[in-house]
Length: 392
Image 1: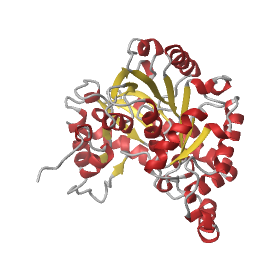
Image 2: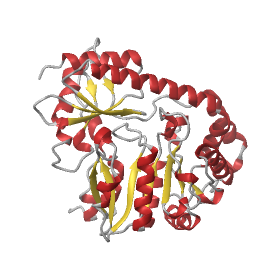
Image 3: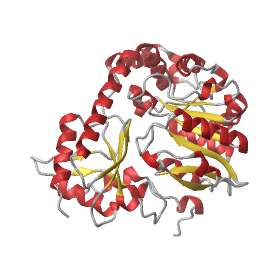
Image 4: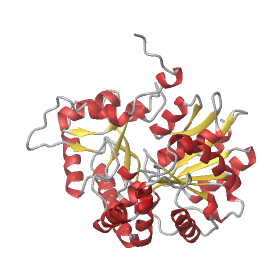
């Protein structure tokens, strides 16, 4: 029997992380060289004990935690985000400008569903976050690649040359996945001004904002009193509070935009997870110092990554920050083949740049992403020892 498929779905690449996991099938790792998995950035540890206790108490005593809730999320959580964002970004964010989603990926799908349809275009800097590209492909929206510049920082002037009557939005991720780069405030302001002038949306995914190496607010976009005529911010609670399995994300946008988001969410999930939202709210109200400690540890690992590549002169570190290092390898083979070889030759699992670039792009064939957030200092040192010993 022929499998009937939506052509756009059939043309969409499979999930890269799942594909990489299949490379482990049949692999045997020596006892003295266990696998070091730097393919995925999601936390592997559970939330801190206090958060787990809050979830358990809610599950046992809060009947509403098991029922449908508001489509756009718990009012208490929306209000807490608005208050903390207003304080941390130096602008004004209201509760009616915040919606909660089942993770940040759903935030992206919901927002782009309100902005673009079949035949429209959305500009994505490359290397791009593959789930953004996958969703646009499934929706029949053309992802227009914007090659990043020095330090993997995209340039607004280059983006301006790609805008057409079909362009609906530009998407930026900072700190970046996969590149790790932190976009300067001036870069974000330039993109805001460009998008406003062209009448398109600026989507800024700040999933990794809690691990930015800079002190103070990373940009002034919310200080603009008219920010919501152009800016749409996405956020995830998965990384800061280790709530990956509870799927809690957020969209910050105009009330009119969120009214359209509500239509999408009502058809997809009806409402976000009640327990996940309770956990996110408890984390926001109680885990500020704990998250600060997590940030310090991630920054220490970033320092170890930068120092490690300084000792590998044949490799080129293109970007490093938050959870990721993005590098250019020195070997005479494509990065997808190299990544598979490293599983067997060095017990290392990392993702090739071909998963973050357009098909056939020569840059992707020389690049690799290393997600180092789950590897401690000793593990990072061992990873570099293995990379230094690779002979191909």
